[in-house]
Amino acid sequence: MKTLFSAILMVVFAVGIQAQSRLESAKKQASQNKELILLNFSGSDWCIPCIKLHKNIIETDEFKKLETENVVVYINADFPRNKKNQLSPELKKENALLADQYNQKGLFPYTLLLNSEGKILKSWEGLPSENVLAFSKEIRNIKENQK
Image 1 (cartoon, helix red, strand yellow):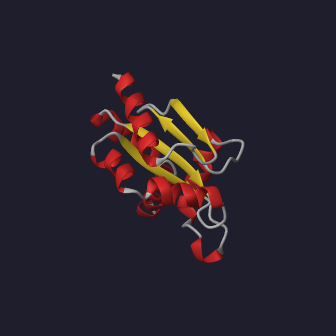
Image 2: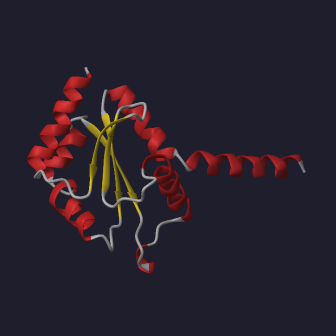
């Protein structure tokens, strides 16, 4: 009986930890590496500006440099609608918790630049007007001003 109770407690505890794991991991990594966190809310299969943002900015080599050069930790909180693109229940729950905390208006796309404690430094409602070079430069400048 004790073993069963312990196993149930471990599962409940693990699910609770999983709910915020990406943000908590990002905060830890950002703190250790002196990085910022870029949190993007998107509807990957229905939101045209979200699709453009990912194609023209997030998926580019220039943006990926921000990650490899320890400028940002990237988190995508996706809310797909098509059945074939549905996320795991854990990821859905985590994205909902992120939205409750950072995107209460339900904006898409909505992109936030956070410090390692989760404080909002900059936000972009909708598709950023900058190209990827200007977007990356703005993030680098904000990071430099955080020192």
